[in-house]
Length: 529
Image 1 (spheres, rainbow, N blue to C red):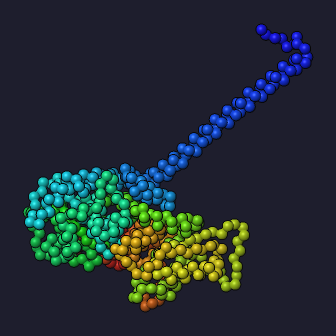
Image 2 (tube, rainbow, N blue to C red; image 1 turned 45 degrees about the horizontal axis):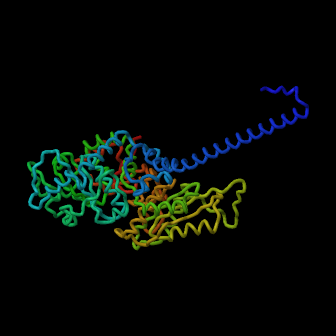
Image 3 (cartoon, rainbow, N blue to C red; image 1 turned 90 degrees about the vertical axis):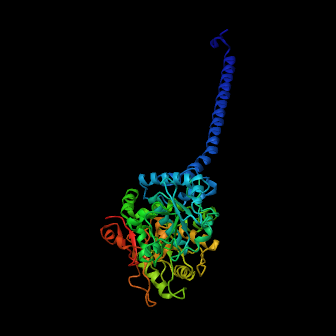
């Protein structure tokens, strides 16, 4: 029954009104409480989901920013550097071509079909019997090129990129000799398979004895007119060094590639970055131009594709970067190698380093003695200097310079050197891991100064996509003037390049290959102007 409030006593009407207001207040409060609870619940769910979402995207971000260069399908935890480099490295402005991406995916399929422990591999090694040097070929078997480590880490990385280039050009599978410390340095680069030459490979015991006197050395066979064009050998040894003979260099001639084409196994030893010589083989050049329209990004792309530091090395890199470089507004890399004998600290080398970095405005000059540079309007700019050298005295000198006197610009300069081991110790696990970590740290810098003819510096500049300033080699224990020069491209120099007589005319007409600035016998790729 409906009650008409105007008929009730005034006091009763007042009490009813108060009751209605109380009920409204309770309902309003419950609604607010409900809304608050739901909102908190939603926010909690978002916060719970957000970290995993961010981690997922962060981990995959490096793969997406490489323009498809890197394949997916790896176990992330087994190789953190493959997924986490974007947390340290700025996105590269150099994107791989679609042709290169497609070629790499095709190679991965080939490697998966022909790699270790596959039926195709097992058939291939059966053809390496000691009494079965000459074989028949129907053209559809898998073919291989075996890389063997020679000299220091820089030389090894450069020669491995060269071997992989040859594998891409000839549809061969690259396998790497794992008897040294390769597994302590790099993760597997190809998905679903391995690049490691199995330890039971039939020629393993012979590899160390492969040299220019070996009966299967291709250059020696050419010299002795022992190459039979009507038969196919089961394997050949290819010798590519800085003192290669003319007959060894004939490996880079088109007609000799036709002779080698059907040989199923090639074993290559080299201490050189001979990839530029492969660009001078006409049939290879046509393919390579399609893969690398910007010629001087060649090593940059292939090194990013092949080389992913193991978790132990990646830990060294990230700890150093986060502790000493991450806060800096700008990072300068200094790679110092001393060619004098005995190697060590030389004042003229130190003078050259200071002259180069200050003349090129890479480091500020020091303020005049007794003056104080005050900049209270803003926070001083922090410049970190990463020094890599076997000799810590150079970084100590720089550190003392900027500790004892302020810079003329008011910048704060902090100097850091990860290690200083005095002597090179190739093939010692920890030494090589430290060396690789330092190469990667140099590649993360904003600007880079390197030493002439240093393969260590070449790898760092290529990885980082950096055109470095290169220190001239001192003469007669005096600092050169000018002290340094700017490289024409980020590409490594092929020191003492193996150029055959058959390539003499090709190099004259190839505009994107120039003689190196720091080695008259060397050649390097440059981008066409």
